[in-house]
Length: 398
Image (cartoon, rainbow, N blue to C red; front, side):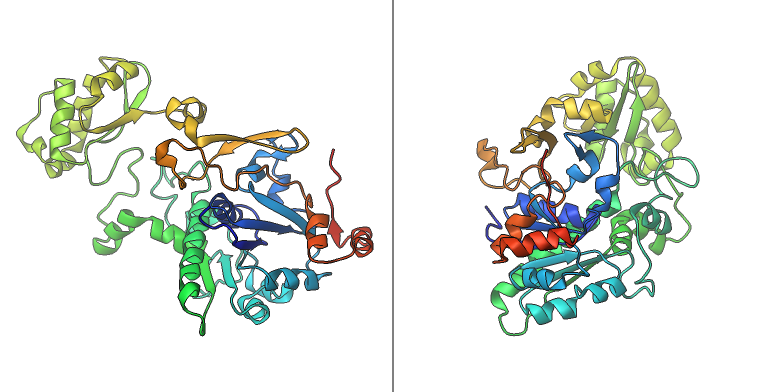
């Protein structure tokens, strides 16, 4: 397993941090999730629920063990864990992180080789470092919502994309520091900082590039179409919807041949099609109304341009092409939970393997508290005292 032996201390909450550590777990890392006695916020984001696990929490917390610990009452335990970990990841506001002594200076003093990943809403250079960040807020503030959908003022994406992308940026940062640490033994700086704001702005890609280079020229939003490519959008067939993307003029020619559509001279290059967008799209739409979606998909098969059906989430989860992405994890109690494997495929996947590194049932709150504390050399009587005082929570099963 790629990251076997790597110890991750996850004291993050909600989605960005937990999704990052779930990715690392899927690559073989050992992840310990430290939660307050009340648990991760998403444990209470219900419904939907399956087998006593909220599906939101379960989507980003597989492959981990859970220690439920009051960080203010028992910082000594947390610091002992930091001392033996390779990576610590948190998403507390800077003032709170300092109070809990999980900021970079505190952690690197305890463990000079620690990789410290901090996820914030706005980073340290914006002047808003203490402002809480949530996916939808950042998406609205930094343009993602404004260029999504077709109606003003735009539409929030259906999933928390900024949170998820921030988590994956955290993974990249952590892996880069692991590489640096492997050859820089004397002057190692293990700090990784990732912000929702920076992730959102960077994800605007060509949209931001268009605005900063040619201010005011682009429209705010194109719905299911593309600013610079025609056709590259959703169309309605006689039955159902499909999507077609022609990134080259040759692809457009093959697409037009499939439709038996007359192509005007100025449409033979993409710029001409973009400039005459409305007429091109109308002519394509008229042709596609002549057959059902499935008929067109069969016509397009093997013709050398990109196309697909527009599916609901339910249809997508039932689609044959993603069945190798689905997985079912089991708990010792007999409970089962379904999810999706990491998008990063390793360990002989091309040869038909079905490696599921790190894919274990999402932990119940404090499920492994006693196990972890005993592993630290803490005696049973002391552990039971901590539980009685509310410093530690141990899942009671059931």
